[in-house]
Amino acid sequence: MSKTFFETIKAFNGEIFHLSFHQERYESVLKHFGIKEIQNLSLYLNPPKNGLYRCRLTYDLSKNPHKIEVTYHEYKKREINSLKLVYDDEITYDLKSTQRERLDALYDLRESCDDVLIVKNSLITDTTIANIAFYNSKKWLTPALPLLKGTTRERLLRENKIYEANIHVEDLKSFSHVALMNAMIDFDIITKSNEEFFC
Image 1 (cartoon, one colour):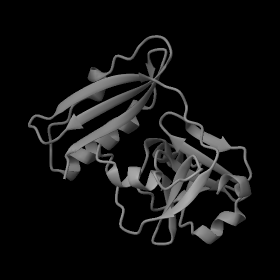
Image 2 (cartoon, rainbow, N blue to C red):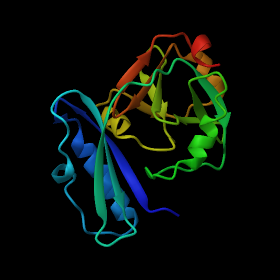
Image 3 (cartoon, rainbow, N blue to C red):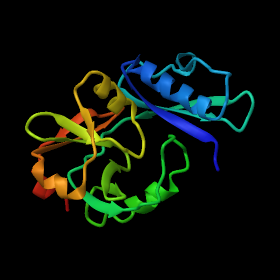
Image 4 (tube, rainbow, N blue to C red):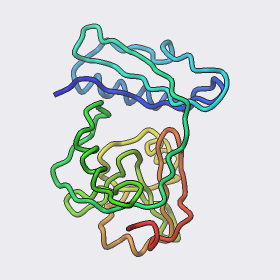
């Protein structure tokens, strides 16, 4: 098993967004492996002063002390206008590992859709790059058992802007809106109807 993990951190005109949530998740991964030598991620970040950038911070826990590397990538949003439901009861991705082969294999099943929405044990989880939420005319619900607990998802839960629930495939037709969320797109509400969005 690879012990290399990463954080995707948003930076705009040199400003870094929501770093405390990335620091918290990084520290939770270290705790998972019993590593006590915690580093301050802010010391490694120096994004460009102009433009929107995806800061990819990678850390390899196979070495002691572990090494942190950062690369900067000018960000262009990947438009997601359709999702295909795919099923995989064995997939796990609870730590943000650089090993994404299983996710990539599911992404390859998207056919003419833009991405996939992964169903595990009959429950909705995530797309390959984002957590998801659904509006039921009263509040936004996000899967209680996502593949990965994203930093934006965690922040919005703490702010009581979204709420956890078990969401089954048959529940999808009862929602009026869908939103995708990750560190780069924040909370992106899809304007398409559900009938058009799920292909």
